[in-house]
Length: 476
Image (cartoon, rainbow, N blue to C red):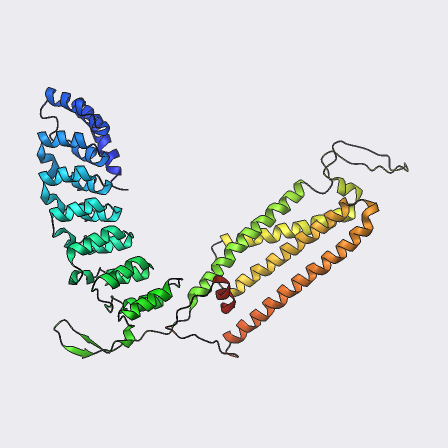
């Protein structure tokens, strides 16, 4: 996207200029060949030092590019403030016809870095323009071996941006058995390391089945592609990738008996002492899922409780009424905007407000804790918040029952009592089961934490394909 900002910069630079330069920029933006010819007729040197070729190459105005090159080929060798040639601009946008026109004028542009340390081939590969990649390699066969200033090969760029078709074209040009396929970036990762890390099964199958890439190459951490797979985040494709790597001879670093140093001397391998680490990634995933669920539910409860204050059962009195206390009438004094329930059934209204406020405050407390940024990423804190959520849900349930009782006609109280009795019993059963289950899980975790029972650790080289629910239950 940064190359696209060149257009705005160059447009601003030209607009600051006067007369022909401004008109030339407008013509390049629109691809107006007729306007270009008029400007050239009035001033043949109008193209000198301009960015018209960069702009038209970026926007894909092939006819305009042709006219500019026919009159001033030197522009094809000039860079803009980002160090980009017109070929960089055309390559990143995939304008194949313009790329070929520029290559005829300046074939050496294939090997020029821009300010970001990339040649046109790198940009075309990142964007996945297969035709441009093919023509650039044809013009400069050595270009696939040129690295970025970050030490990455064009194959690394294809893998990182998941560009399969350009990758295959480049590998065919380099050679399926060429040692350059095993080139490592600054982190010591080959393209196979990155492919395995990103779970790119299609690209990995291509490398392993169609090339002679080194399947036991070690990165800066001493990890082979198999190590990267086993230590990475679990995925449903892991099992197929593991079998494929094993079939092609990839091993973990502890399983490699010998290696050769740079002088070709065979030495006995000394496997790295990899510290035994607890499987905390699932613990982190569990906490993250719980935090997200608590935030959603707490926000919903807070919204319902707030609305319960604005719209209490029965609504509000529309007018004022002052009744003499000495009279024996059934009417009661009230003011407009006050709750009917508060006047007619003050005791029930008080209970309604207590439970509704408890639900509202509990849910807001959970939201405040989740967004506070305090270091509360532990199970104890999460269980505390879950307990607070139970309080909020229970309070909201009682608020519902009170509203239900208030709004039910007196002649339906028999049916109401039966339904209410069943609902309360079911609710208590559900709460009891949830509480008992979490009490057992918390007790089990505490016993494992203090060493009273031993946690069963699975073999380190086993591929797990558990779903999220099983992962959560195992960790608790």
